[in-house]
Picture (tube, rainbow over the protein chains, first blue to last red):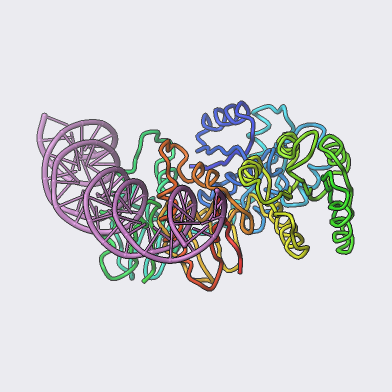
Length: 221
Length: 221
DNA sequence: CGCTCCCTTCACACCTTCTTCACGGCTTCC
DNA sequence: GGAAGCCGTGAAGAAGGTGTGAAGGGAGCG
């Protein structure tokens, strides 16, 4: 499913966009300011970003520039009519397209589809962490060449950990990613899946380490 | 060039400060009371403000509170020794640091430089103070490249200090931030966590300094 | 319908972390 | 110089987080 992060300080705009996109089967994540938006993007690796230019604390252009230092994710700018100069700057800083508020949903969806198609070509189909390999295209995991038999939830969980191998991934990040639409607390289920994963990973290769009170970390050796 | 506004009712103090700062290539503007000081700030948009707490008509604390309604400009408080309680109030009202009269010019210039530098490094997903680095996204802390093993409370506490590295953070500010929902007095627990943090930080890099009766300060070297 | 697979919940033992207490050193103030 | 208050730190109990076996329940399928 297509993941989108919306960065806009106005709750109404976020709600509208969210509704429209969810109806098209997008998985939507919202952020109300630049820093938290960047964190969402860094972790979720969405397929597209909708970015408001007129953010309060850290303006949209700064967010975009910061983002482009490490990500090529398609970015669609949301701007109001009188920010012409800013729009140009944004495009030069690496935005893919823009729509002017107020915008029609049809136009928005069309532009979104276009910028995604443009970027679609290159994507990493495999991630590795030591002897562990995840093939995202085929949903397959293997450990030192041997195929691992993982359930969908386990694969998703391991994916979240392996993508940031060696680093801490917080409980909140894991849960938002593995259970995006879930409102109830999944931390209990998470512990059980971690337990299952550890058993399947065995004692020799990569290990899942708990950082008490914070999250988990996948280490290579 | 750096613009500074000095608000102090004593002409000698203003003249001294003015000389020192001009020698360092600051552009200096003087005001002898709160209202005219605020006007200067509103009009000049200075890069820093030096504010005497003991002003005749409108006291320094009132000036600061008024100022903070519309400006984030760094403010360095000038106070005399017996205004301890006032200093705490000033810091909690948004002052960035203070120096006690009489003060050395070296100290004044150093603190001024610190509070100006810090305003730029807001909102970054990573915070550094000397050899100390906090990665907020991954909840990781490292000292000179080595990862520090911190508990959640320790991380939160160090975060509060590091975000204002070089400046005083009052007990009240720390406690409200680390234990937001707590009603009981956590000052005892705070001392213990500070102790643990100091042990983990060691004796070489950044140090946590106690400012008796006021709060703590994280210094780089 | 019965089977299988998978996810979630529960129970409980275990372990880490937080808080409190106690006490000694240090500074400040009279 | 003595008293009072603030601060640092060791130790220990309290509180809360974590791992895992087992059981319940829903979806898909023949």
